[in-house]
Length: 232
Image (tube, rainbow, N blue to C red; front, side, top):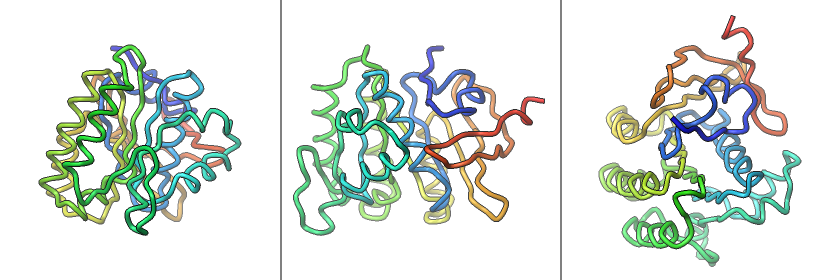
């Protein structure tokens, strides 16, 4: 199976080379666990390979997202090539830029994303796509409508062999909702942040052995996993 490297030290080793091409992966964790950093680093790795990278962002404007990524000493010129879908500015009544939408109206957003994917992503481009955070979709549009939206988007992205990450806040939704989203996804990476530090677990992954063990990682210019002890 073809895989897309994440560009994250240690994680690709756990994933036997990266995430399966065409898959949709759920990133589940509490606030501060490192989900957004992982997702942005995944997109940045695509930019370094001159591949399309799309960020659907519900909780920060483009300027802040870019500033956060630049704080990791990532190349600003490459970041300018990232496609930003603004699902944040509707909160303040501001303009949404070239691509925008609201999690309150998934019908319109689905059309916007569908047209973008059709026009800008080819099957051989090995694009990457991130939704941060899908919890806002569930809060504003409801669990059932959000699940239907995600299923449709997954089919479009898989058709073009795009790897996608869907970020979900742990502890914010009931277990039934979490299970429904996990069922749609092809794999799950869990993240946690506690007194002992930050840890990650690949609990389920298409064509990849599950690790079922919490692996520590650090945040310094991006994520880096300490996997040496895991493989002993």
